[in-house]
Length: 252
Image: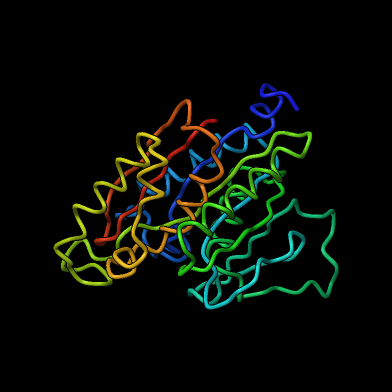
């Protein structure tokens, strides 16, 4: 396959956070602190859907969870509302006994919600990483995904679902850790500028202490790129409620 063909097939990698409050039915607010995050996530998802109708979603496994089947139906019921999502287009008619699974991993739920809002004809598959996997294993997983993307004959894209530090302020879920703002700033700069080397160098122990749950998915994204991205966008970067969220895109 020529380099031009590879560039056409693997069209983009987008990264979004995973807070359930992205879903309006779960936030209980119409104009809240998550509104800018939600708008950026949907805009980025919409742009991704315009580039590719097939997505590979990379996220963290929740307590040993497994990737859902593309034809199954997930629900945010475990987070407070029965908002149902899919990873593939809705069939002409659901069978009467369609099973709704409230145990989907959060990365799959968020990806399914984005897909339903901005790209209902998109089909997504999910790759889950152990949050404790080594940087080398994460990079290898990303490289394996890239080989899968390069092997198909249709445009495909990565959607990385990953969160930053949960220790950025006193009201953060993990309370304030004075080391977190500097580490989060370095992480944000790596995502903003496309620095694969900086993502690869994220320390698992430090990330665990700061509650940076997205370390492995971001390192997998870095491993999926053979070179630094040719273009990057940063559509949102902030810390509502003391948690670091970054929304953006890398182009190969």
